[in-house]
Length: 450
Image 1 (cartoon, rainbow, N blue to C red):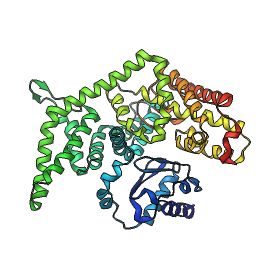
Image 2: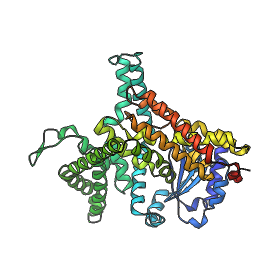
Image 3: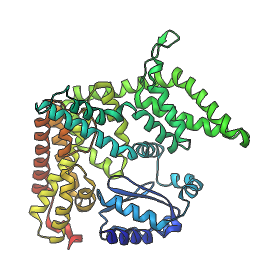
Image 4: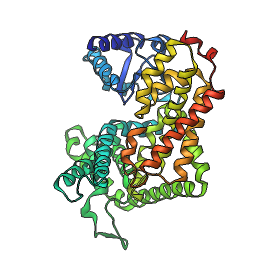
């Protein structure tokens, strides 16, 4: 298997134009994301047809869909092959040109937000699942909530969320060209409990006010200030003056501006979404569920992570995630319909290989390997997702933390709603299946699978 991963990495590197064309690369749960210097050297069709590649998304980066687990191994081999090339320096030299291509300011902003949270996904998933499973065990009566075991498990699962602002600040500063350590300090400024009791202009500071929105504002600002100050400080004094001045300015602005603004934005987001769901009900649930898969296709769905976290921070739960999770469920239903309807062995093998990941909440293999290439089944999958989203909205299902969707998300659903959530998943499966089976797929659509 290691040899296969190495061969795949070598093939991908060749079709990407060789190591000299690689500006930067990283990976998320399912995708190898590569920035290149010269797009004309990239053989996109060859990449799409490479065995082991599920699909290719062309955005600011080339996002090569490899699937969960495999992507980590291929990325490791990819990095070894690239070797000692100083990717960071070369990427910085070409950053302006790369960002200019095929992007609007809004898309670029969402991609930057995604880049801040993508590295945190494994920690968020692990912490959420430990917390959710512990709560499920306690609710089932198998463990006392006050027992040492339960307390320790909750400590392990909840540790991340108490200090998440530090990690977000670190990643945000790095993404915007600043020092990660100063970004971490920006996060600490927001969550520091020592702020309690301090009054500014008659208003008492509230630790954590502004949440992750405030952290993002402070971290991005300190990165900007650091870069500006560095232009005017003598090199011999840079290590002393630059971080000190940047922190002092950011600290003052954070407590005077970013915490109040972050708090206002956070309140607006949470109140806005809850109002939409309250007023729109099943209609809002349908629209949100049906439109999520197109966002996944662009890779911008990770930009919603701070919104999910703010909902949890403000409300104690997240009513948006169960609705959006129906996107994957509609996709699974559509894939089952195609599997039962097609006579093409290659297509059935593709579906069989991707379905387990889809059921467990990783939808990219089905999207890029099955429904999107076929066209119409992608749309019927979205309709199935909308039906599931409407159901989740109708019964006010929400989660205690964020994690992968699909069946594993049931561990994170609030008390008393787990069975309802699972019923919603089944309904989305059924709707995606029926829409696709009845009018979403004909075997002649699958010519490329011959």
